[in-house]
Length: 397
Image (cartoon, rainbow, N blue to C red; front, side, top):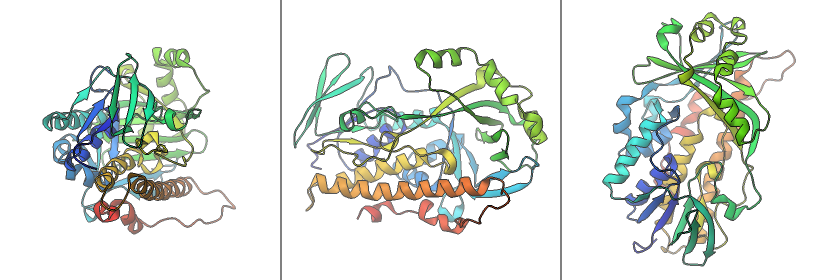
């Protein structure tokens, strides 16, 4: 893409901020527009695997967040009788990085600081409304305040409820999975977990999985959580759920006696201020991530939603933005924008589909075996080099 052209990014979350930095590395001017009045400073911890950490390291972000992150290499799955069922490698020195668990607001803080240091504009209080017009050379859109802007490209990095996606798919709405994550943060000393391998998901046939995952650099705090079935709710319904979190505490404690003692200790004291709810939504596989004239693009959760089994949601979003910046920089080098976007989407969807297959295999092998179940082929840990040890520059070439 010629340097005189510019990219508009809708959304100043993790994907939007990282995209701005990757475009800046390619000398492509960009501006971020964010509906909120300030950077997002809430949200729980996220898990970053070597494939994403390589990208963050290339951007100069990794060293800025490492000291505030919890390092780990494996995820463990145990039975209700506290027997080890399985483990899943999430990082290792052989991939260049240990896995990291870091609070979302820490990563947003550092990404925002680096965006400011690069003099990349972020315009707050700008809620994207709709595209007004698109040509073969630019796109014009309107904000909720009635103002309009024009750019060479418009990228929707605005999450699973993306308004930019409406331009590509006017009738598509994310589907609520009828499941919500109910989580809380408690001090690890409460668990008396010396020598217990964490993070862990303790499986129970009746109650489902109970997750325990350390956070903070010294692991002094852990997230605890379970999934709850829930009906589709409107805004008022969600407000009612969030206004009284005592039911969340009661839910986390429910059936604790059917789990190992570490779970019973984990739920013994849960501060209401440390409780969070996360509804799970999905979108169907999309035929295209860009508009017919190629001036509007979606990526990250706006383009694909990945279940949490392999912990790859945000990691794949970082892959999206990094490879997008590399491939857009090649526009004009014997390839059109339409060609490079088709190549990019095809490569990205192949990766995402492989991750979804890995998710299904992990779900299959971490559940207790039932009599009569057929043995399923599962990936060995050594197979995960395809996921964690990736040369994105070579991939784009």
